[in-house]
Image (cartoon, rainbow, N blue to C red; front, side, top):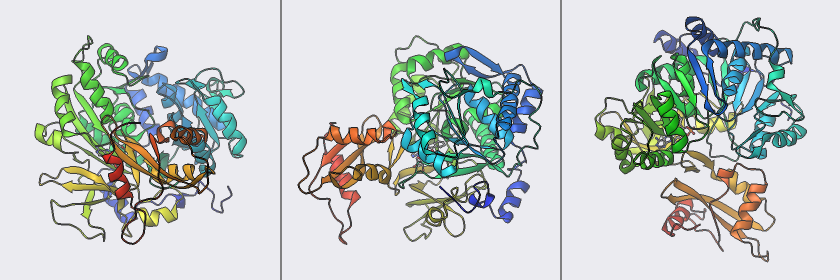
Amino acid sequence: MTTETPLTDRSLAPTWPEEFAARYRAAGHWRGETFGTMLRERATAHPDRIAVVDPATDRRWTYGDLDARAERLAAGMLARGIAPGDRVVVQLPNIAEFFEVVFALFRIGALPVFALPAHRETEIAYFCRFTEAAAYVIAAEHGGYDYRALAATVRAEVPTLRHVWVAQGEPGRFTALDDVRADTDGPADLPGPAPQDLAFLQLSGGSTGVPKLIPRTHDDYIYSLRGSNELCGVDEHSVYLCVLPAAHNFPLSSPGTLGALYAGARVVLSPSPDPETAFSLIAREGVTLTGLVPPLALLWTQAAATTAHDLSSLDVLLVGGAKFSEEAARRVRPALGCTLQQVFGMAEGLVNYTRLDDPEEVIVTTQGRPISPDDEIRVVDDADEDLPPGSTGHLLTRGPYTIRGYWNAPEHNARSFTADGFYRTGDIVRLTDTGHLVVEGRAKDQINRGGEKIAAEEVENHLLAHPAVHDANVVGEPDPYLGERTCAYVILRAGAEPLKPLAMKRFVRERGLAAYKVPDRVEFVDAFPQTGVGKISKKDLRAAAAERPATP
Ligand code: OOB
């Protein structure tokens, strides 16, 4: 891709107008910290305290270790030409090196682009191409998948990609991270980024054909960590278990691993979300809090009934990413003996929590209220008019840690933000008289598959690439475990050979797409239901999908 503006240009990331920035600074939200200095301060204050536990490889890094490793790696990356502002796609499982890599990049002022382990060629090539990434960091293998093969394909496609670094396992034809680390203990000798600079690019769940990238700054993200820590009771004695993929915004910052590190607490990385693995780590490490998506929370509450592990250290279970049903929410405290904290957040910014001292009724029936007194919330109708209190409508938000625009996406931004800077969340909510939000639905064309977001348009485009497909529509249908799963309605071309649903799914998978985006069910139809004005009615398709018995 060629662009006229260099991709390091700050204008690619719309930012807060100065009047707002001044207000957020004056309020003490933005305190001029950066991730690089934050880690250095913690390492200076308590070098021997454990920062990261990686049970799969039996490693325990202190704050001193993490800081020294990040510093050496930063020096090594600099020596290999990574410069401030460069983008580096980071696709790592829950291993200690994740933190070494991202803090090295933070220190340089290069921007990690947070890919998920589930992403495949389609997504990774897009992230690398769109951001003109200079490097891509992987583990050799994880979950039976060889990321070196993926890297080889992507490298051949993306000319800007100068380096592939392998953080764990045999590097094959690429370079081991161990060899990138400079063999000097000296400082990386860099001015480092400014607090208002971008820290990283996070991925949006999205509702469009390609994912959008979310530019977060040191100042704004660190504020959300500090606010989260306060509301979730995180202090230096806390032990946070990272169960979900570390790069996702929820386990990263709500309060997540970065919140825990900010507090000088301990992060324990769970190699798997299954209750047996996680419960044994909770017992062994004295885990005090963790965060789960609703399907996992359900699984854990069931498994807790018969576990032999001692879960008594667990104080708080955060559940979010998708709507947690009231019925399931009620089971958390009796089953796990801890407080449930619902979290309704988004990588674009706004995060809502139920408070630890909220009445149980509020905890089980709402998705919480914003972190900050300066989070502005509007509930509006289709014409952006504010609705009376208690009404159900579109959630718009603006505030000290909510972005003012996606990275390098002026057209999307004109649609996704109001002229005065409110982000259109695409969520349908109701505000209770206690100021708590209840998520009632969604206006965006997205499927929330147990917390994993799927943009319908993206999957539809892949289905349409099949030569026998005339048209395709993807909608969510109810699923007892995931909350929602995907159903693809497909019209075949006149005269095309009949296809089996399985062949259609295989076709999508073979296009190199993350497995969670492959439709759970494919149904061939002759026509789509239409609205009064002749547009395809996704509402009717959803209703049709919901009426079907839950069979594959
Ligand atoms: C989190 O972030 P994303 O960016 O993957 O997804 C955001 C979207 C929200 O707009 C909403 O549609 C949905 O996920 N969502 C929920 C929810 N939490 C997120 N819907 C209903 N109930 C909830 N509790 O998913 C995320 C980021 C930070 C913290 C927690 C979740």
